[in-house]
Length: 225
Image (cartoon, rainbow, N blue to C red; front, side):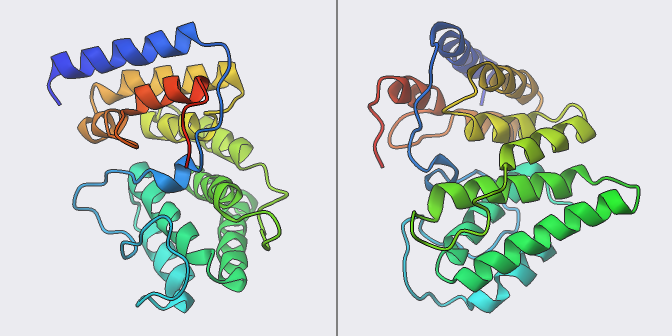
């Protein structure tokens, strides 16, 4: 993305953030909107609305997800991997439970060892929020009692400045809290000036509109999944 195009995107985003006072949930954004990760490795591709069997063995979801997360993958890759993992895990309640349990334990163990791992806390929090968006009412949801956003905030506090984490938090808080959402988006936009892949994600299309346009449509109640 050239500097002029990114500048225009930033202006639109800031205008939205400063001009709106409330945000509406724009569907299952963490699930329906793929994250651009370039050529990085993730789980096998799966359509966001897929239900039923696939050629991928669900027994491998936890193992394969952890292998990617433990490879020191960038935050954007973690977001896309956890998005795909959620779609797969929805097919099997035991797989869903195993994955969130392992990620919670992984994060807690880092604290117990005296070396809190920001990425581990991010993974647990982001997966919990993805589960909440995609595992429907009446279906077993092992993350229902978890405040994933608070875990992502903990990750940000441990990690320090990380625009990709701020982008993740901005997606999570699309429906609020409002002030926190604005802050996350401002930081993501600022950091994207030095992060071409993050800039690409900020300008990416979602239902034939950019993320900035999505926020406007969500405020007006015009986004439907």
